[in-house]
Image 1 (spheres, helix red, strand yellow):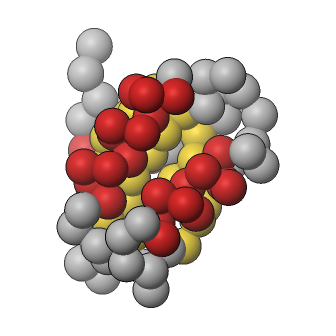
Image 2: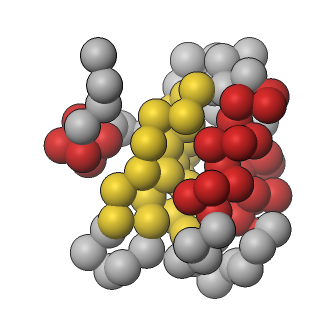
Length: 87
């Protein structure tokens, strides 16, 4: 089953990392810190205005074993990116 934009918008993240003011690699570094602050099975939401983050987060998630759930564009024009901590 694939995750839809509506599904992503409904997710209640355990933690939200606001990295909208950071350029690459700032959002990725913030995501690494943020995932360490949540429990296995919980969701981390990353807010980023850097378009490269939408490519970096899925690659990093796969590399370290977390589940990339997807991203949506927020009304403010930034990306909301969701990952689930797997380990």
